Image (cartoon, rainbow, N blue to C red; front, side, top):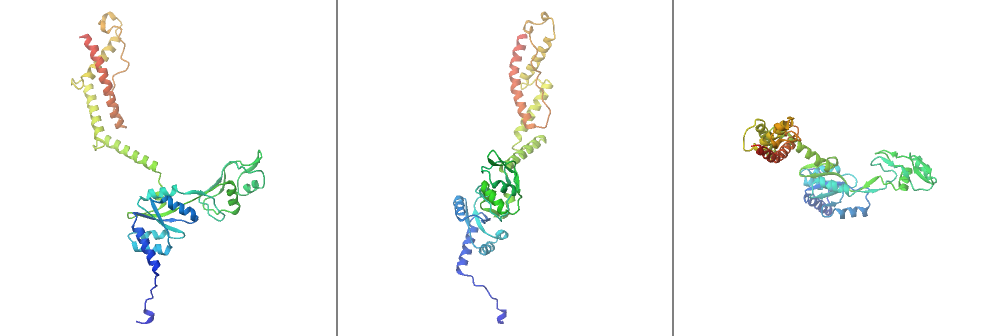
Length: 344
């Protein structure tokens, strides 16, 4: 083979091999591994963040080329993280799920001033109010950057919320100086999660940024809707069987009472119903002498006997109402038995 045909291989220094091996061990040692941006974070603040994460996550910094090599060696899908390895980044490993990791990283971010030349991470607004600055050239600086400001009552005041820069626009030196003077810190400094690989799935930040309370409410609403559908369709499950049984019991009882079936289960309600009808009839007779002594001066029932509703919109609540009606009817039944018993 000619000299030109000999493949030239790059000699990799020993320290690089050892570093790649350590990165491989790091990646394989956690259930979830992600890439975080660390640009703009002062060294002292970065060390503080690493201490705060101790016990839940670990940050590992290295050269991007070595990180990519380690991701390739691990394979199993981790190589997909290479697209996020650009600029100042680090690996982060945790045994928590990606959603918990994202939430923890977002909570650890702190407000920070923005410098000239940086890109605004969001719309920047100077709020209405007293700046606390004595009258002077600063009022002109505020107006120059687009804020509505004037001297009032011996102080410089912003007269209305003033939008001075849109998200994605570059911060000028003048605006950076004004924001610094006002103590406005429009950006957040922290570990910026770019992507995380867990259990064979690659997650991006927009997929992890969920409102836990809203998500829980959605699940509860879905469960309630599914339960209602199951009850209305008379489809028994472990969760809906008690409600269906209670509903069927209430409907059977309603039919029995309507048909005046003389069953031991219905007798208290039937007696109560008859007593109410008797009282109502007694109130229609003007001549009290025509009435038995026990019914003289009797008043009409305060409310008609409860009737079963046939609504199927909210079946679980209907079953509870049926139980409540049953208890109330039981109590009325005792009074009805006493009234009728006095006549016979």
